[in-house]
Image 1 (cartoon, rainbow over the protein chains, first blue to last red):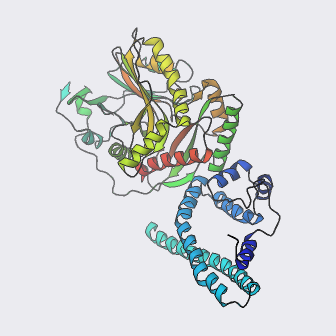
Image 2 (image 1 turned 135 degrees about the vertical axis):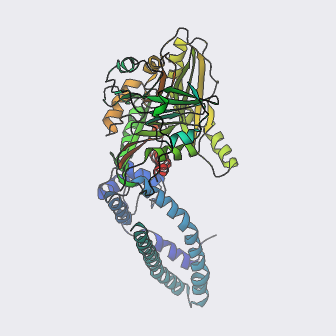
Image 3 (image 1 turned 90 degrees about the vertical axis):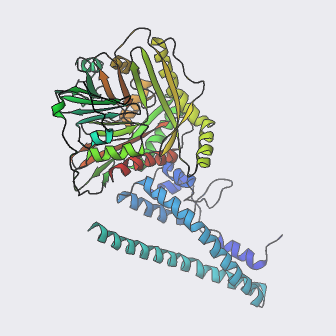
Length: 160
Length: 375
């Protein structure tokens, strides 16, 4: 079944807008060996933006990878980081699914029924998504940061 | 001389200098009549067995060219076996009562690894390339965690915790090396010999059903079976050359420990002509379960890529008697203690089909299990 015009617009908005990178190019940008990046891909923490005809990555992946390496270079063993990432993936996945469900039910369905035209529905849907995606990211980051700080303060009291 | 039956836990509470315990025997050594490094090279096992004492404890470096092996003859050895307690030496040297345990205990704190995890992963990548080029079939790559604490690590406390968690393993304390190893290198009683090769590891499940599923998966996993075959076959060949009635199961069995499950092949037989247990060790060490296949190439790669000295980790550890009988394990799942510092070790066999991040995770779990004994 063909997608509705507003869903087509949203799908296009989800596609990366910049030129994608091969694994070797990503390795050069992040200054990491390809073998290590392959580990991160196999573990599912780095998801290719395209699989066919070759595996390509979004340049937006460069900064998170560099951040991960900053954690490692600051003393966190990679094995522990991978374990944390696995746990975080398992914990976040159902929340992400529920978020998509909520977006679909309360924003997408509403836009569809309250717009005057397909073009307006498409424009409103893409705008809503473009606003909500970074907002959701900021909320999650802020909450996790607050949890980290709260936990760290508690730990300092215990270890005093 | 025989003595009143003593409970091993009570003996351990008297803080013996050396300790060896397996499911069938407990040996505690107090004081020291002699302690020496038997040196390096092929002759180190022969020099170690030059002592003649009722019970002698020994721990050897993995690398035959590295110094640091130790042989120790205690002044008094308390032996508990078959429901009897026997004293070898002067009974008055036995501390009269348990030594009080210091109430203060600090936690272990991470101080780094000889090779950071991401470089260890790259080393596995290099080994896999060598395996692909058929330069080597198997290499056991180990890594370490250095720890520190605000107070000295208490080896007897660690040993007691290991004994609680791993009662079926070989628990040992020999001059700062403390551990609980599942792997019997060789046991010799008169002409009877036994050895167990372990290679191939999977996790424990949360339930018995999970355990069964994971165990069955490993028993049919080509990568685990290859790793095991490469480790067990050379041991079997060596033992068969000196014990023509050697027997072993046709396929590996499951050995279930508190934290992991292993593929195991137990060997047993009788020597065609008598040999000292340390002569048997000289024939077997290093087995492919801690070195690789072929041995010389694997050892060279280990030296090149591990970026650390294994010291006594993965070396032979155990005891022997004046008549040449004894029980020697491979020092796995262990820590080297030095006051308030410690080093933990863990290693994995890398074969064709190994996945670097899985090997990293497996060694992380092994290190975590040992770390919990120090907490």
